[in-house]
Picture 1 (cartoon, rainbow, N blue to C red):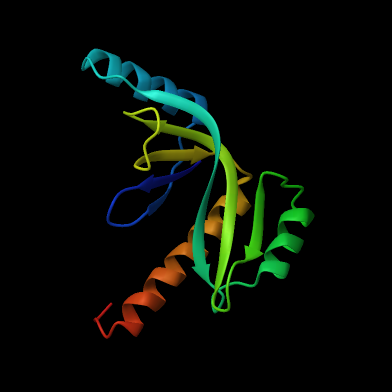
Picture 2: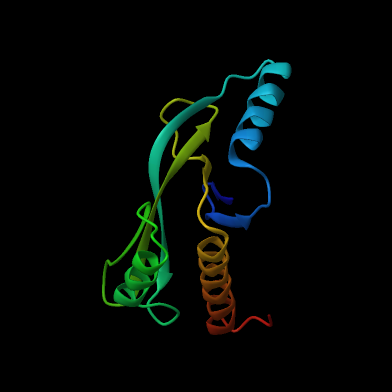
Length: 132
């Protein structure tokens, strides 16, 4: 399962071994036990990757080969590729830009996307001059 956490600062990407339905059910039970309201809806989310770590045409070829129709990649400007995923949005407010997006894809595809994300983060840290 892929989990993207969207905050004001920046999105965060996690690869989890949990079952999607079980994870959502646990999250709903936890929120209810804390007296919190939580909204869940089927949505599409996206994140950007530098074109240096991936190429949209190659990614779409890979997704087609893996028979994955819930992920697409498209070049969005000169330097970046946008990855769009179908899944579920969870938030404490109905129309919030902050929350958690989860999706379930074949393990190989999830691992590949997670690796691309971390390669992009490492490249970003290196280009900022920070030690990483």
